[in-house]
Length: 274
Image (cartoon, rainbow, N blue to C red; front, side):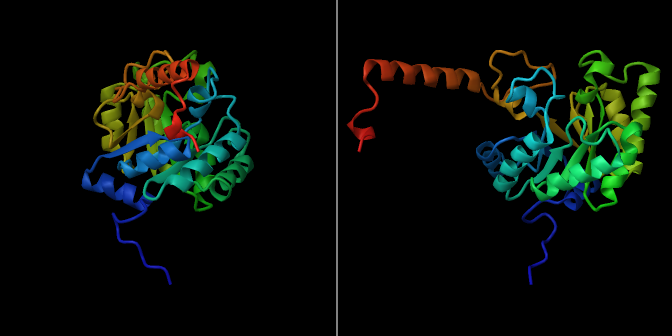
């Protein structure tokens, strides 16, 4: 018989995340897409991974998240899940995987759990996707919501624009957040909304809020791992990103040195030969 895990020990679960909200304990979230990076993040203390459809933009070079497929998310989730001994693994439901109906939402959530090893899934949208959230939760698959600036709605929004700035937008975003909670989500991402609105949502919901470009009052913060590590290939990071490293410079310098040593015969030496 397996031992019952004590709260706060070993693998983090959705119940642990809820307990953090109750205790007023903030937690750190990052996106993750690969085994080696996820292993490093896990050992460094990140409590929750989102295998985001942002992988399409930062790893595959897409201009939006919309082309990302279920197969791609399953592949990256599987890699991250194998690396995570502690962090909770949440997989994005990509565009088209739940918008076409409740049946598709259920089937694709099952794929992410069975094939990808996800411990929860993330669904964008509020009131319009509440039915899909409820249907997945009814299968005992935990769901994270996502309101405000929802990247899968980029065409409807006319670009990546801050949401909730007008009174009507404020009320719409608040209603969306409440609908996500009522549908049974265990947590919710608040993206690209004013600080005051994020504070109001965080204080009014019983589930944890995870902010990205939503100010300091959320229960947790998330960043795209490439952004916070400074891997951007020259692209300008959004205002809300803080770079904790400059890997662009470090990697470029290392590769230039390698190229030079290969061309001049300095590498490999006897030390690097059998």
